[in-house]
Structure formats: structure tokens, C-alpha cells
View 1 (cartoon, rainbow, N blue to C red):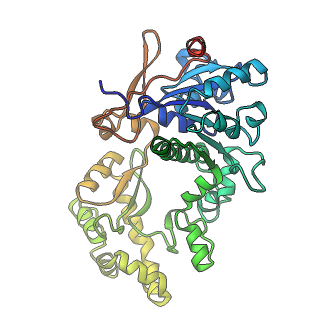
View 2: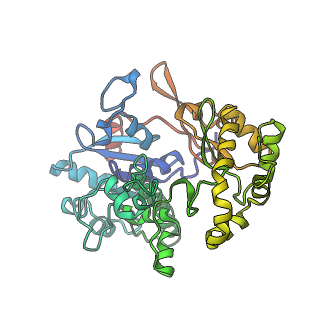
View 3: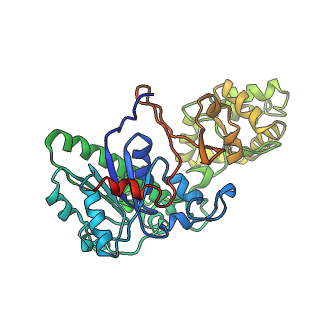
Length: 410
């Protein structure tokens, strides 16, 4: 089998919750990622839930598994002179150091960028923190929920009547990890070309703020704050064929008038074929359904008088649509709707994803051996490399590679 795309790249990683996903991205691509962990393991190793087959211990946290596949583990106590000395030796064998300690922590132990760069000018040194290495907030306390709040995405998540919503999962940390991997690869290219390494300074706040998409630009250019809009977006009424709908076994989400698919008249054709269009061929509903396109919606948003003639009839059309989807399963609605180029998707649970025919056809799930004779399925990665295929390995047991790696230091 071909080697991974990053084969030959050595990364020494001093991370826990914030930066570990960045290291995983590199490790799954073939880099040798050596994770330096404290005695007893970090926070991620003690985060539930745990893999039932392994019991509750430092090697069975699902949070750790998700962020640490394909790595090696070395246990060193950075609070001791011996641990600091060994960590320094190990770091100087690397092409890349990746760390997420609070600003100044590693520098105080002889493991900061300035010390290591002097000893090895080609070294790429990536720091992933809540707010970056500089600025008045650089030493502020950070966790993922702080990152989501301070980045602005909580302001935009949820319905207008909601308080600010937290997005599921550690999305600020994930965003920071992805940006760290990107920055590292760019710096490695530069180091290969010039022999000069550099510091990659990643701020979780900055990385996550990019997920606001146009919100910052709306303020910069229009001096308007974007707000939570829920499924209706900027439209003051729930449009038929837009948003979430219940089926007889789950939920779907669709946006019929979006530019990516067909318009509402084609959707009504489907309803007619199933003899469930009810009175939508009668006025005033016939005219509304025939003209329900993105162009009309844009007009209604900007023309209150035109909207007043249409909006009172929209709820009835929507009720017909609700009854239509309640007559079928989510899978039926999704597959038949997509065959008609209607923009529709199943609101998938984890079970739905495990049974998803598209993911199965692409062999997205990979087998990982969790113990001798015990194998589980594990989610894969969202890209394929035809010449350097990925090979995902299980996460390391705590300290599993300490003897091997330290022996390599002599």
C-alpha cells in the first residue's frame, strides 16, 4: 500500500482538548505524530462517554478516540527537570511542534518557540490557544463554550425567541484544529523550500469567527448586526416547502425555492401525482403556488403591500405540505424528492448515518481494532487521496510508545 501523503513528517504534539484534532488530521494523512501526555493523561482521556467494551479508563474515552487516531503516546512529566529535558530532546527531532498550553507555559519550561527555534531554525512551531499569543486577552481562561460565545456564532444560532445557542460539539476547538493543520502544512512547505521554520499562531476565537460567514461583512459594510433567524431566515412567515417537516418516521429539511433545485410548481406536480395537492389548484392558492419562486420571495421581503396580498394564504398551503410529508417516510421523501431535483435532506440521527447508503457505498466507515479480537466501525475522513490513500489507526494507549520513542533518543 502507498505511504500516506505526509509520510516522513514528524510531529511532536503537546496538546489536549484545543489542538488535538489538528494533530489527528496530520496523523491520518501519514505523519508520525507523537503525543506527549502528562502522567495519568489529560482532560480528554477522562471525558465520558466511554467505549463499553473497554470499560471506563484512560484508553476508552470516545472524546479522546475522535481526536487522536493514528498517533503515538509518550508520557513525560513536564513539571520535572527530567521530563522537560526529554521533551526538549524529542521536540528537536521533529519537523513540527504542535501545542495548546496556556501562553507562556512551555516557554517557562524551556520548550517555547524562541528556545527551540534557536536550536533548530527549520522547526515549525504551532500554538493553538483561545485568543492567540498576543493581545490583551492572550492569557484569558478559555474553553470551547467561551470560544463559541466570543466568536459571535452563538448570536446567530437558533430561533429569534431563543437565548444565544451553543452549537453541538466542541466546534470552536475543531475550527482551531483545522486551521492549525492548514497553517502547519503551509509553514512546512516554506521550511522545505527555505530551511526556515516559523511560528504558526492559531486563535480559536479567530478561527470560529469565520463561521459567521457574512455577519462580519454585514456589520462592516452596512452597520447592521445579523441576528438569529431560525428556519424562516429573513422571511416573516414560514414558507411552504422551506424548513423542517415531520414524516411518519422522522424529520426532513428542505428549501424548495433555493437556486440549487427546482421551484415550487414542480413540487406541486409531485403532490398532484400522489393525489395530495388538495385544493392547491384552486384560487387563490393556484396563483400563489405557480409564482412561488426566489424572485417572488425577494419581492415580498421588499414590498409590504405585495406581501399583504399573499402572506395570509401561506399557512394553508403549508398545512397541505405538512400532510403530504406525513404520508411517507423520511427516506421516501428524500429519495423521491431528490430524483425530482427538489432540495431535500433527511434530518439524520447517528443511527441514520450508520445506515446511510451513500456513506456505505463510499466505504466511509473504517474498522479499528480496539482490543485483540475486538473490532469496531469508526467514522472516516471527508476526503479521498487516490495516490496516497489514508490509513486510520486506533488512538494510542496512554504511554504505549514511551519506551520505543525514548530509546530512539539514546
